Length: 381
Ligand SMILES: [Fe+2]
Image (cartoon, rainbow, N blue to C red; front, side, top):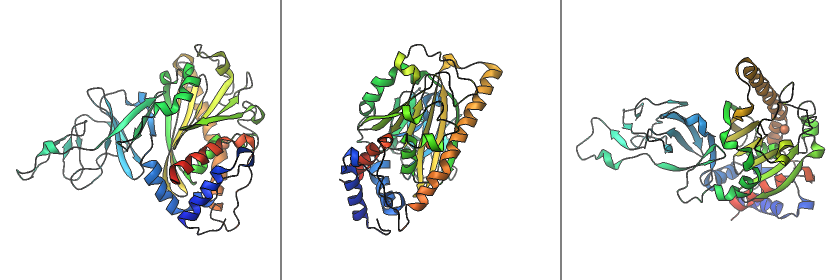
């Protein structure tokens, strides 16, 4: 590998990497992580075309509740309209392109632009614009609306009006894991952070079972040992692996949580699936909680991480005990995230090195092959 490869050379390297048979699989060519041209192509061919998780549906229960996010280069508002419909709208005013809303909140009335007070209904229709000529028909002006889909309680948005629906791509996961009833899990907390790495390095790290025994030796390994974890065959829209829980052992709490999620398949009681929903979401599911991250690339070496934990309603204790468990969960995941952050920031820095070369991979990293093949399918045609 050499620095300053052209985009074409980079795509050739990705294609060759994705074509390797599993037993000869290698890590991702480093320039895929460091090249601005690759990032530009990812925005065009991946971020602008694919489904992105924007949070949990139960965060949008109250009519008027909204949250803003960015997909590719587009600022987007996700909101619950007063007619009950969950919508995704462009967050860019149709007048002079000012940003309409920031952060999150609950709209008491319309969406009003902070620049010249153009105001829109929650369905995106322009309702009022003052000091305009008579020849301007406000009824002809509305905010672009994007497709929304809900899967397992997560809300996904796609900027591409031609996009295929998400659920059929995830059918293999739905069938395997639907008895968890993840759509009934309730948000416990969410957080937003910026990590110094390439977004693909983070996705691959989450799906990498190999590093657990070493990087997470003090946290995860005793409860979910690397030797019992296995990468499974992925699907068109996802990669998946399963960790096996050591009974009575927990990395989340000082005492293991009793599993109250009684409807689940017997097998799943001791399994923790790790899932990458391509391109930008990663998830861990257990019978009593989820842990998920949704990524928004900011630069080749910077990614915004929106993450959260949801809990199965029947297993979560009330009052002080519940608060105590919540704090333990938060601290556990902060600790695990911190164990990864430095390592994956280092990979992002090294990706531009003259002597960076991808090496052979272990079967414990096999989900990374699915991610590399997905990238090749999306970027190389
Ligand atoms: Fe990790």
